[in-house]
Image (cartoon, rainbow, N blue to C red; front, side, top):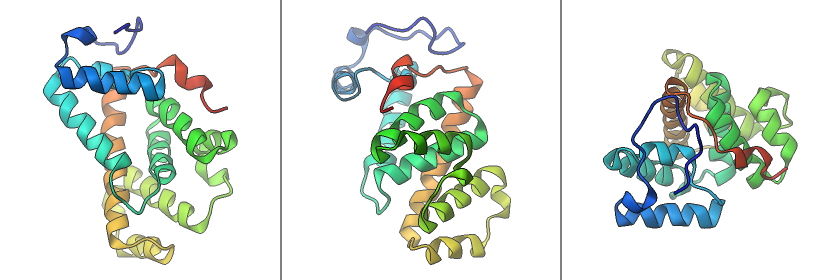
Length: 192
């Protein structure tokens, strides 16, 4: 696996693809096939196969598992949370995914900079207001915040999914920022 010069500021012992367990070799080959690259976050986690396994399974379940949230909505959450946290890696990577799923390059940029400037549906505005508050002041979430989501068409299972996606990106934003994780250069030009 060809590695970029700078994945993180840490000197991690990132193995060559051939040195990974067979399941991860197949997973990385699938990434190459579908994305044209192995995301640097996965390459970084590959230094610890147990963590890579848990991270990738949880990510795939949250982002692609059964849910009433669309893939675009999940990516919108990732970008809104990452914008609050100013996580360069996730803003670049998930901004590209918003551009892809929405087929709107302007929406991807608006969400990265300030989702409030975007022409969003009531549903999406409520969702992003909720995850922003959850990121900035989680101790201030109360029943009225959940009710606002219900009034916008979300059920309780949807609120659970929204909270889990937001929580996941709050964690990954902190890890990426702590180790200066860099996004793959390919993301910058995708879906423009």
